[in-house]
Image 1 (cartoon, rainbow, N blue to C red):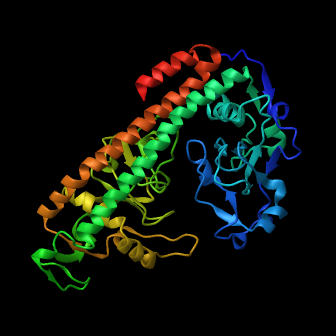
Image 2 (tube, rainbow, N blue to C red):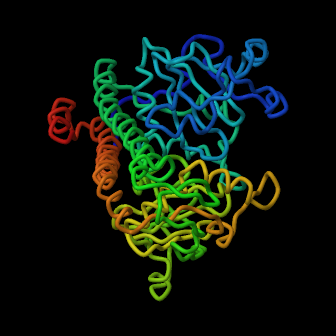
Image 3 (cartoon, one colour):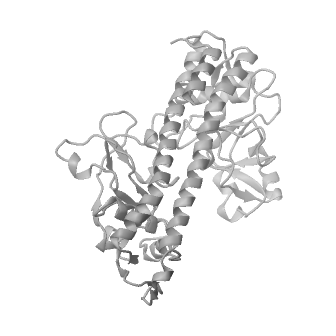
Length: 429
């Protein structure tokens, strides 16, 4: 649907500040050896993976180095774009951010908006919408590595429909409230995941619940009497994943990849792409509830558990572990997230420091404590309500994100009024 408001370029709505547009420095000007544990934070691609901006997970530069790279500075309310790589990613530094200034990493660019003309949050949400993404990709180089042609020149030419400021602020506030709820769900899930890990450690590392039944020595140290030590391979079978190209078009089942499991300790299926697969091959690679997948390359040792039914298969850089029961699956998943397994994986990885890997045999070739099945079933009873609540939060966040992404064009076109959307959201949230 057409948007009938006047469109203006970012050049026309940018701050009169001489540094309202900026790009990250050339690679030779910022190296790993420049990074420090504190100082001026460097914005990287991972900071654009959140709903608006992930204001953590930084590497830092000294004040002196940041001053040297002052032409690549960014500040609160600046809008940050990817110039090369995952183009289309956009973030906005919060108005009340954790730091007073930042430095853009290579392949990022930013704009500072004139707040007398536009609401920066409104501009950010526009470029997150279908219309804004189409505008960004209109300047993409169609060949080679995905990138924006002549990045700063193109950025200045990006166009935005400029509605009256009060409506901009209303739209931004509306969409931001949805992101606030999504962010709250994410924080709740981090808490739930931490609770599950703490329970696993209490039961199966510290053995707090079982010390009164007596302990006995083993090659892994004291364990509850009657428990065993064996290889992880005794609890599961292994299988390599399916080789296919991923696409955002729903041409077949979801294709679960390493990058879909290494950002957080749950799977956000709404962002998992699809693939084509022959019907005769699909049953072999179809994922079931209780399957555990482990990365063998790209980020070896990272793991996830399938917790909800989905039409999905798993990619070739993943190895599937199948266990005798759901209780065994959650125990194996808990062990894969433990410090003991992280230390094992770090020592067992082959390949260079750039391309480390673990094959299926190596992934399961480690010793672990094996409790009685009844104990595993009891543990499942404790943690399953927590995991179900986590999954419910993920599903709600996916629904809220869909509402957010479809609202912008409807609000701009007049198909939906802000007040009507607010009433709808009260029921949805």
